[in-house]
Length: 254
Figure 1 (cartoon, one colour):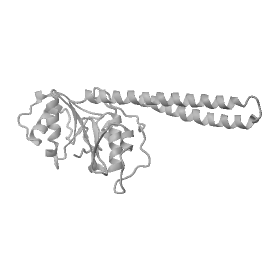
Figure 2 (spheres, rainbow, N blue to C red):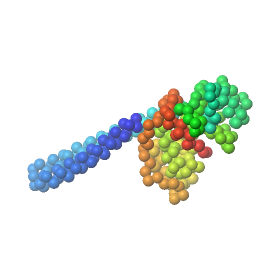
Figure 3 (cartoon, helix red, strand yellow):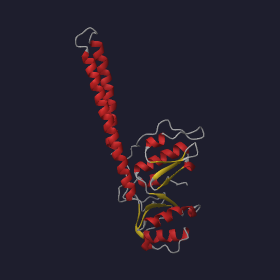
Figure 4 (cartoon, rainbow, N blue to C red):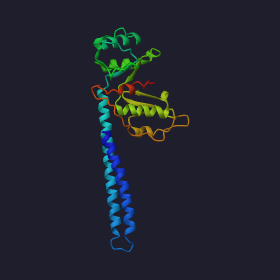
């Protein structure tokens, strides 16, 4: 979807540039008194028509991209990412996760059968342990775990939502613009505390750019609609080797 959006944008810029050059040549080559002067007007009408069509197509692609993102986030509503768990050879990930959540969140009733799936993401490295994708059977239990994450403070273990690539990039852009303490995620959306003290729920770059910032915030001249990347995370939780590096940067604040 992102590649289509970039292709349309590149096509629009290329067409606009070439048509501007052609229009300049056309105006200089046709005398004002020539009976074919209306060619310039016809050309301008055609140019406006094509640009309008491209703009409409771009908006439709953006709408489809937004709807796809919402569907993808909905499919992850029972999932969380667990960071900072030491990695061992031949480890039993579900057992490790259930023990950590039970002990550190003070939930003695939490058992391994509450988990639908657990797995490490990405390829193993010696630098830091890989994040663990945790899927719960029940969304309400997932939410209980999520809202108990403050108990993990100073333990070296953190929780984050399993965002899509686009939502994660939006989250990082928001943190760069307003600061880490003013941005967090909730139910897959990015929550930003603006300069007016109000909380804004955003899911697109346009919504982020519409929030004003003060001199105390970290301004961004331009926030790209999408940051090109070779990494991706699909709907069933598989990731490329660079996913770990992306996820490990996030510390959700609330």
